[in-house]
Length: 243
Image (cartoon, rainbow, N blue to C red; front, side, top):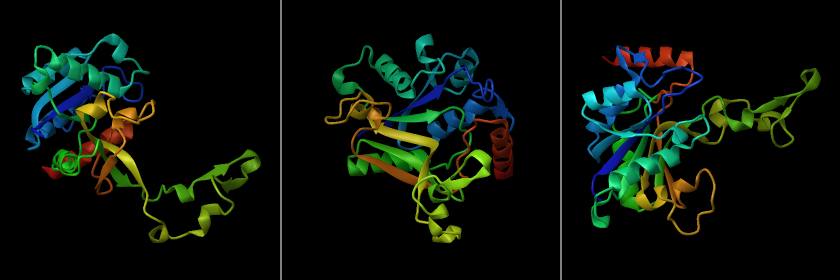
């Protein structure tokens, strides 16, 4: 497997934080942090930004990344990220022989200005060494563990989200079994997975992960995915503190 192609997804629309992909974070447009992360990753040989946002495209070109113009139907609130990534991959395929087409891709979100420097390299390396279909990054759920999830119903009555015992009888965080959630840091995947060509995978919104799905674990708080105003504050603090 040669170096992966990084596809950075930068849709213009956002309800939670308007213009978040180009919003200034620690003195730079948010997308700039992701572009430079990809460019510094040893396992990445090509960096492409898929966007319908002229400002994001301008920042990408200024930093030396390629730009694929995303059609409007792939930039709506209901558009799926894998459809946008496939469109970018197919656009890059134009004029190239089948043999020359990229064998692996990395999906990165432009609204994630904070991620471990080696994250993409770890994900692509695991993809290559195991021959799996995809690798996604995760973090421990911490105090928001599913065993501590409850339903507060009418009259304030509390019942377990699942099972019959509230908190599964666990009251110390250190006693909880390991549980992880995707953190938005990276998704590395083979061409076959992205193009929905892995045999035996049922259709659905996560079909592009393929059948053999792996994960890399990040330290808690090491990825900041901007979806709210407080996330901007956290990202600013992390990035300025790292300088």
